[in-house]
Amino acid sequence: MKILFHAVAALLATAALAPCAASAQSDHAAMHNAAEAAPAAALTDGEVRGIDAATGRITLRHGDIANLGMPAMTMVFRATDAALLQGLRVGDQVRFAADRQGGQLVVTQIRKAAP
Image 1 (cartoon, helix red, strand yellow):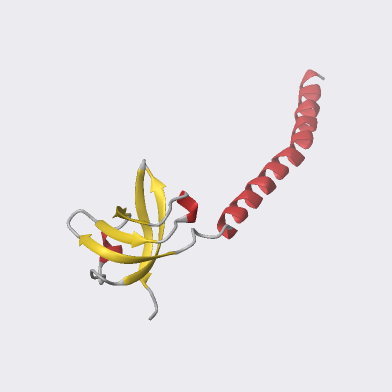
Image 2 (cartoon, rainbow, N blue to C red):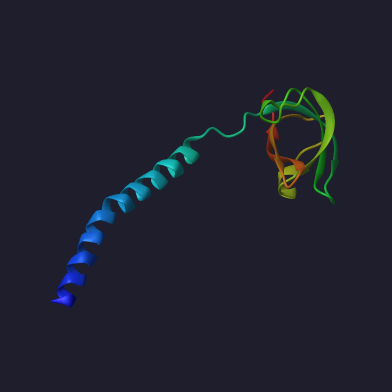
């Protein structure tokens, strides 16, 4: 009798928690989908003023960077991947995205601007 009582109690507890688990999975899926759908950082216009491929740094004269709340200026950024700098030359007009990672300002994507 005691075993039957525990089995029924466990069954009822499982049935009661199932909707919570389903809801949690549903909420997690919704957050994941929202994160995927979130737009990437807007691209900013800039001009390459210097490149240091050895350290993965690029100097850009740029317009306002909205996601960083940064006004137009010239500054040095670190590239998240040195390969991003390949094919760029001083004087190139570019479109790029920047972010703050580990306390540093980094370029996360960059490409030559269409003429």
